[in-house]
Image (cartoon, rainbow, N blue to C red; front, side):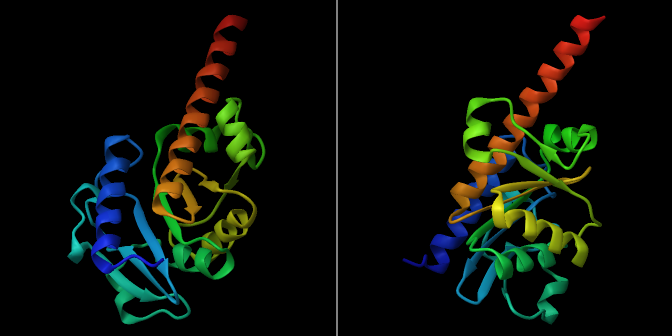
Length: 194
């Protein structure tokens, strides 16, 4: 059952605040979108995620860019490409600190969670490289999200996909928890070696 516009905005508001309250983004960074048929609703560029209202979201076509892209998030191309190439109905882009740190420490292109929840729900977390809002990043991210729930962009942040914003938020939080635990365990191992 599709949500009404009012319910969609309430979902944006709820999960924008949750992302801020959980420390997964700083106020103006990160973006949220949901798919509705051949359209997507996405936060505008520069929007404070803890202050989302009906004017903070723009509706765009998934299949073709429009002049409204200029006021939408700088990561619109990534969201659009994810919707074109995956069954996702919701996407969250966040900047969780430990996920970003781990993306820069990883020796290959995958982070393997060490915690039970991360191992069970994520199996592994791909790390991709690409310039913010670029076609290359959009392609790499959408490819990774075909077989994974979340992906980390090297030195930048995460993209998580789901059937709902709640699922995309859960994946975002779990990627960060998994990276945080891995970071602290690796640090503890290094300190016991000296």
